[in-house]
Image (cartoon, rainbow, N blue to C red; front, side, top):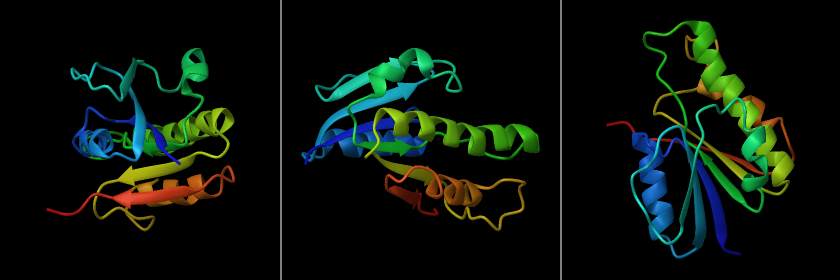
Length: 151
């Protein structure tokens, strides 16, 4: 089966790498990038939705149907922001997007991509590791985790 993937965070370092790999991979038939700002690139496999508010995906939900994979690469550093804002982006947003995608694509594989060295025992109130635990306890579709390599 060919892969039809949604990628979030494709304007960031890790997300851009995932995007480039998907565009070059012959097993990937189509890529939908959902971003807050334009990618500034085109490719025959690439579709793009520029959408500023990820907590309000309902207006574009119908466009998210028909995909069988998601690489969720959207994230932020905990440096310089409040614990509440970090939780809102790292945890709440991930689960919100995952739930909407699961409704549109019940058999979708959701790949949560985090930075190197993150796990549920980190010192922040909510860590990418605890987000992994929550996404795994969600919909029955497969959930995968990936961490970028340390440099």
